[in-house]
Length: 122
Picture 1 (cartoon, rainbow, N blue to C red):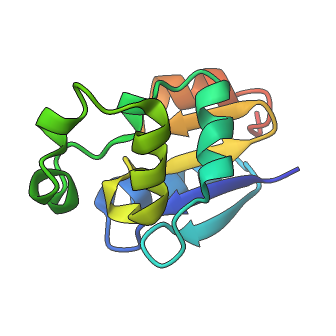
Picture 2 (cartoon, rainbow, N blue to C red):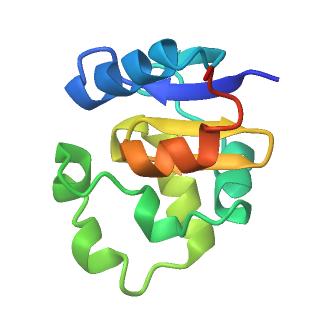
């Protein structure tokens, strides 16, 4: 089953991550995270796979700053946070990778190798 990579085409980190996937032969589907944000059910799968809700936020993004999420997250429930993330793809740290038993937020080559190394071409 291929991975789904929620990414923003103009994001340099996303392009680097997609290049890493291609270089390692990891099958994946790309979804523009701004045009088609992941549904709440997808985000719930990511959290169930071990990514904390607060780690899903793109803390350097305009939506995060304009929405005052730095302060709001201290008292926001996970349900409210997931609802906000599903409504605005710009709030989500990217790239976001979702697969069978795999969830990754952001690009960290070592973490990706550890999580995806079995599916990567040797």
